[in-house]
Image (tube, rainbow, N blue to C red; front, top):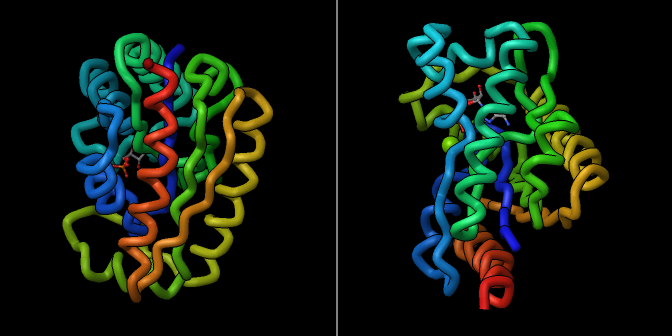
Length: 196
Ligand code: AMP
Ligand code: MG
């Protein structure tokens, strides 16, 4: 049986850092797949964008087509090895929030876990200000709070259309990182028994 863990969290929450550290310590060998990378490959092939931060500005219908193509690739990978899928529960587009996993997409992927990494809005703002590599939207703490609320709601809808369990992991400034990594390792190690 495929084993897929989706890892979500809004930009600046520390998702990539936690993921990288957790993967060094898991007993099962996970393939790390970035959903945005797969969508970006398809988008570039189709001549739609030059930079990944342009994708969320494409019209929603085009984004959904890219999501489905990315999902089909993931299913193929998951047949062979456990997949840790780095992605977003919702995407803030210029015309509104877009579901990261519409029904036909979540049904194809059928994740075992949806992990949500969270931090306080002020922690997230601080981390964003320290990472200037990306073309990130400037948001207020209120907007960050709303986005995190919506992501929890989105996760519920994904669990409705898959067998996923939802796991919320907090990543706070003092000592939080180590604990967050431990919690993710625990979830990932559940894959070991699936592949015995
Ligand atoms: P990231 O590097 O993880 O911030 O992702 C880069 C971009 O990929 C995002 O800004 C989105 O445009 C896109 N992306 C990632 N996951 C999804 C998803 N599930 N649905 C739609 N777009 C996504
Ligand atoms: Mg990232």
